[in-house]
Structure formats: C-alpha cells, structure tokens
Image 1 (tube, helix red, strand yellow):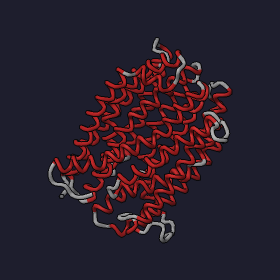
Image 2 (tube, rainbow, N blue to C red):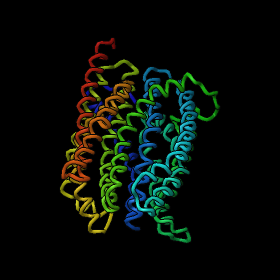
Image 3 (spheres, rainbow, N blue to C red):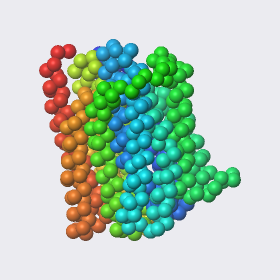
Image 4 (spheres, rainbow, N blue to C red):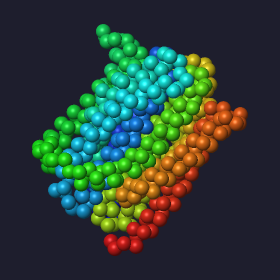
Length: 451
C-alpha cells in the first residue's frame, strides 16, 4: 500500500488490490458451489440435503468470521499510522480470538444443529444428509477461522495476490476430494453429498498450512515474525477486536441468516422446490462475491487512508469502489436474466427442478443492483471503523422489513415461494439506501477533521 495522488493512480491501486480478492472469494465460494453442483449430480435428495446444510452453516461461518474481519482495519490503521511494531502482537491476539470463536462454534453446533434440522419439515434422508454434511465440514472449523486472521493480516499489507495464490492452489484439490468422496472413486468410500463436507474440511487445512508457510518464509510477512513468540492473551486487545468485529459479524450474520430463515420457512414445500430455491440462491451467492470483494478492498484502502487522516482520498476510493461494483452488477443482471435456463442446468437434470430454478433465478437477477451498493458501502464504513449503526441498519432492513414482507407475500398472495424472494429484494434495497445515507454522513463528519 502506498499513498496515491491522482484519481488514475487510485483506480490502479484499487484494482491491484481488488482483483486478487475477487479471485480469492470466488475460489473460496467455489468450494460450496462445487459441493452443491456435484451433489446435485449425485441425486436430488443430496442436492437438497447439502443445500440445506450449507444454508445453515453459511450464516454461522460468515457471522463469526466477520468478527475476525476487524483484523484488516486494525492492521490497516497501524500501518497507515506508521506503527508497524504493533502489528505482530495484534495479529497473534487475533489468532487467540479465532481459537476461542472456533470453540464457541463447536458448542453451538452440538446444541443447535439437531433441533434446527428437526424443526424443518424435511424428508428423513434429506435431513440425514444435511446433518452429516455439516458434521463433515466441522472438521475444518479451526483452520478456517485461523486462516481468516492470517488473510486479514496479508490483505492489510496490500498483498492480496498472496491470498489469491493460496486459494487457487487448493481449489483443484477440493474438486478432486469431492470426486473421490461423493462418488467413491479410487477405493474411497461413496458418501454422496456428505462426502463434499469432508472434502471441504480437508481443503481448509491445506489452505491454512500454505498460509502459515508463506508467512514464515516470504517477505514482507516474515519481517513481522508471527508465531516466533507467543505473547500472553491481552484482553484489552481482545476488547478492541470484539468492539469492532462484533458489529461487523452481526451485520453479516443478519444478512446471511435471512436466507437460512427463508429456507426454514420453505420447508413446507416439497423437496424439488427446496432444491431449486437453494440452487438459485447458490448461484446468486456466487455473483455476490463481486460486490463483497469490492467491499473488502474498500475496507483495506479506506482503512489505510483513514489511519493517515487523508479523508479526501478515502472518499475518492469509496466512489471508485461503488462505481465499479454497480457497473459489473449490471452485466451480471443481464447475464442471469438471459441465461437462467442454462444456469439451472448446472445444478440438476430433473425437469421440474430445472423449471423452478429458472423461475427463482429471475428474482436472483434483481438482487444484483441492491447488492452492488449495500455491500461496498458497508466495506467503506468498516474502513472508517464505523460499524455499530451499520449493524442496526442491516438488521432492520432484513429482519424487520424483508423477511416479514416475504412471509406475508408467500402466505397471502399468489406469489407462493417466490414471495420470499420479493421480500428479500425489498429488504436489500432498503439497506442499500440507508447505508448510503450513513456513509455520506460519516464522510461529511470526517471531512471537517484536520488532514
């Protein structure tokens, strides 16, 4: 990361940071993407089971790992303010927090997974597949959260290409393990969709060990000497991580768990509807990696500029990021709309599932524009370390407006299961508007401060 003067230099630096993040996010999500597709090719029940399991796992993972996203702005502010000597200590405290969060996740899973699946009106085999899929994933929880901290450190240094290389090296291995464990090839057990959970857990461990090796052996990471000493736990630093990270994690949790709640409500429909809904949602989540990546890049560059009190530069970066996200989302909207039938065929060959998936993808196309605004704006606000109001706005938009409205449309109109998607789109739009207003307010307040 370097200080930039012209708009052109800012665009180049932003793209230099953004593109590797985007590739990394798509590669990370592709693990779930391939889990769903390869399970769907095994059977419709495995597609539904893996889809339900992943929809329960995703909000838990994104919400808790969202807490660890605070590492990026914390390190960014330290580097921007010339306090490099404090970086290693902060990262190691993040590692301790990651281990604590992993332990909490295991306890939550032990207490809640069975009752939640039991409350859903699923066919017994679908319920079994969902349960065992999450159990398989659970073996990768510890490396997943530890890697989130290490990636926050790597990205805060502006070395996002390193995260990209690590993930790209591991993605083919994930597909290979899926093939072996889902279909029982080369002497491996034939586990169906459940096998994809174990395959992903193995891949998480590979990513973690690659990240540790690179941080130990290569500059500029090795100069910070992570893991060379183990400092005592600092609850003051933990407090900083949680005060900044909890609102981020809760904001992400409320955003992602809304889709799990919809899945829970949709359990009243048959297996084909559930499978189609989750297939469309899975693809919409893939395209969401674009605004999410812009969001993460904005947190890095704005955190760097805010740490140096360069408020005008931070504002310019926010405009660049949102403009890029909106431009790309227009292309994604058109692509999903015109090629929805071809996309549906990726997930299933069942004629009814294909028809339903294509219908859900019509609404997924409309997701793109609202996501293109609200996600980057959230990232910009995190760069300013403004997270509490963001969390409240997200919760209200999704849970007070989006979900109740979707339920009402599904229950009392002819929209049926599509009513939930309409409600979600309205909730996303409300979030995009209110968050944009909040960003404007924060930027005006910061611009009044001395440079």
